[in-house]
Image (cartoon, rainbow, N blue to C red; front, side):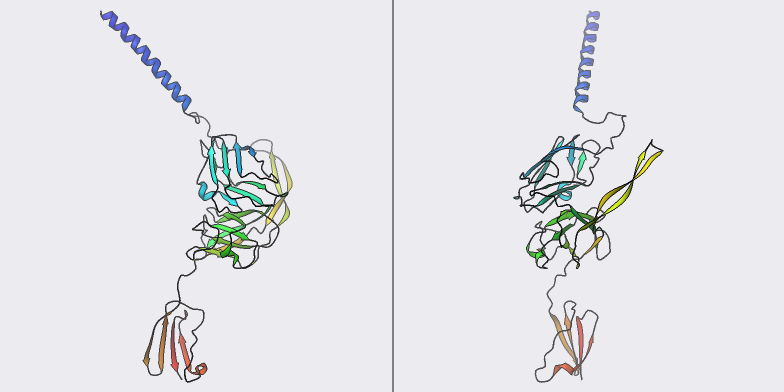
Length: 335
């Protein structure tokens, strides 16, 4: 009797051990990742194909599919990914396995270069290695516009870099274009305040930075932080040389080869942000403490003094004026 119980117990133990092993196998199959103890993956994802092809001409597709050599994901796509020319309807951008899809909801403009700047938003699924400074470009016309302008946006009050602010170009050189129509080309600053606007056609432009609160690519709210440059921006380029190094091994240089490359200008634009002061100028109070003196107090500083009109005398040489540096407190002494 005791022997029978012993055999039953052994049989149960064998079944339990087999079930545990099966669970372990299923778990290891389901858990996709780097094997414990293996080398850390430091290689970013690589593009292996796309529809349409990168740099495609006469493209009419509004849906773009980009395929990578490994599983990828998007980090902070709403903050980092910028489509140029800007889209009034925000594009749909998502990942599925090894693919990133972009659906442009605005109608495509004729004979226009489109740039989808991902910055470092695309990372691999396991280690989060970013594909830095990745941009996808196509054209609805017969040529790709390839000019680039770059620079830095600083806070005018402390000269600190401004992260995540929109920077845009207007081919319309009228000052009113900034408040009437969206930018022609856009980019967004990185953590260092640096920006690069790509896919620009030759010509003359005005450049602005805008904390675009309502995402309409127009300066439409006085509460929005902004910056501009008085000088026109004229994109250009020059051929430069740089040294490329080939190595015999990890320690020994084989050869140093000078190679030509195209460097785009200007590359050092500086924009300083500020916020427009929100006030309506008006007289706060007036007083006459002496027979020959009266004072005016305004709610805000002013560039010029108020214009006084004499009712029955010539006001042009009637007063000695005492004022502060803001022109908001003014004392008039009657001569």
